[in-house]
Length: 219
Image 1 (cartoon, one colour):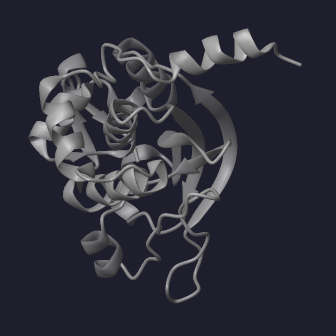
Image 2 (cartoon, helix red, strand yellow):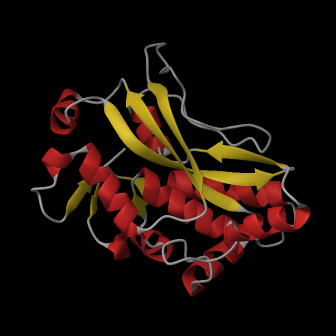
């Protein structure tokens, strides 16, 4: 069993600002204040942040291959991102509120991927799909704010809704009952992630894509 001091030390790693999870950036702090003004309850703060990231940060499948593109403040400024970028922003806003937050990675199979995307990736497996983990009510839960409501409705998927007392991940089925997401590998949670780690993981997972300089692909 971890000592209380060690547990508190570890928890601090999930509260501090980092190079990408720049929770102390002026723009991040300002957005946090805007979203949570007048709210004291951490659950409600997390809920407001979740829906902001889910619906106001547009999901895109492709991103520029630069460290700057993965900083929470830049993702906020751009108003768009893919899974890991949205998770980084969610994590940053949560930490700015004093909510311990980390990045959690999975490999997932997306059974709704268009055929042209499957051909591009070589399969329907999306490696290192990033979501946000939050410490709420004495427990850690995973929250996937990747897909915005407009995209979900357009493709007849099932939206992820916020609940502070359970994991909130993408559904295994669509609105029509056909297969959607299958979680096939759990990589666990980290307190921080670097651009080099992200780049290396994608290059290992999709080596055939990297001749296209300046672009990375992910879920």
